[in-house]
Amino acid sequence: MQYAVTIRRTLRGAALGAAAICLLTPAAWLAAQVSGYGDKQIGPVNAMPGVLGKVGIAQNLNTQLPLGLAFTDDEGRQLQLSSYFGKKPAILALVYYQCPMLCSEELDGLTGALEMVDERPGRDFNVIVVSIDPTETTAMAAAKKKFYLKRYGYPETANGWHFMTGTQPSIDALANAVGFRYVKIPGPDGKLTQFAHASSIEIVTPEGKLAQYYMGVEYSPKDLRLGLAEASAHRIGSPVDNILTYCYHYDPGTNRHSLIVARVVQLGCLITLMSLGGFMFVMFRRDYRQEHGQDTGKKVNG
Image 1 (tube, rainbow, N blue to C red):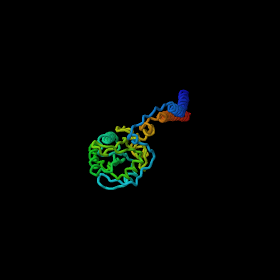
Image 2 (spheres, rainbow, N blue to C red):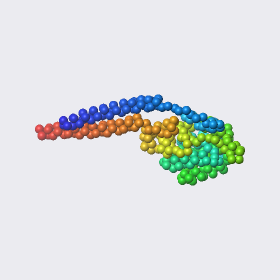
Image 3 (cartoon, rainbow, N blue to C red):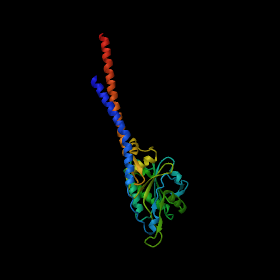
Image 4 (cartoon, rainbow, N blue to C red):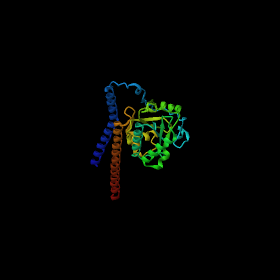
């Protein structure tokens, strides 16, 4: 019995120590982060020459998209953006279908990343691709959808892919809301048929608010998975996704999900405390049974 009492005292001390670490470590980590950010030096930014100075993407996080805007889908139907929102999040991409290089690389990167994500277009989210060129046609949109749906390899998800065209006022309103700045530039024939623009995709909440931006033409499947789970308030994905979204946080500065060390420590401490608590419960229960068993035995012998 003395041995069991010693174990219980030791475990109580270990549990209190683990709790103290859980409470103090996040505070120390956050202080270190503030100090680290304060020490960073921001170097000079090179000015982009000429027309490229008008091109870029401003991250209008938490901005409501104008869902009343009407666009024509790849089947020739004129629909409002609100048709694709209300229940599921969406991935939005502003491109143009005759783009000689960058837009294709962007859609290639998106499709390749989605191949490695368990969630599926149509069932869990929508993919909305909108042309910034008002002269492009429904046939062009349909051809792009057919190409990328085949490349994706899941033809049953066709109702989750939406390739749109629109008028200049609708395009301008959507681009302004997203923060997507672009300009027309001359093509090889000297005519203003091409566009200078940046490349990004946006995660949009079921309510139509801009939640996350991913820049470039290559996208991390992990970021897409976490971004969709966060945007949908964890209504899609598995319990593992919910744990990951607790331990990872979207960083607008890097356009990535960064590991939150404090939360990982808290989660580890919680698991440790639960393990210690379970072990102590088993020990107390066994001691209780032994004591009462001995008392019962004495009474019977007496």
